[in-house]
Length: 134
Image (cartoon, rainbow, N blue to C red; front, top):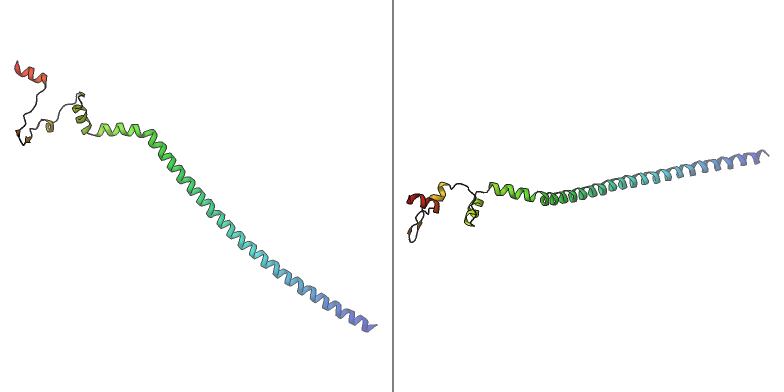
């Protein structure tokens, strides 16, 4: 009987060692799986941040583009009138077109020019001619 007990104890000891070894291997396998999942999650989160950043950048660029277009449409008349006020040649083109803006002539307008046919005389307006005749 003692031999049977000894054999039983030895077999149960071997079984226990096998179970402990199997649990150790399962633990290593689970740690490997967990580390792979962690790495995959990190890559996924990093990729998600990249995609979100790209989306935000594209949305921002589109927004700026649309706001610029809107600003050009809304403020274009204002800029054109401001530019017209600042351009000195605009008054000359209006005078040539026949509209009298009432702006005084500058010295550059009164200079006689030399032409192929000779010196051009200064023109006097009709009101000045009538004053000169008096």
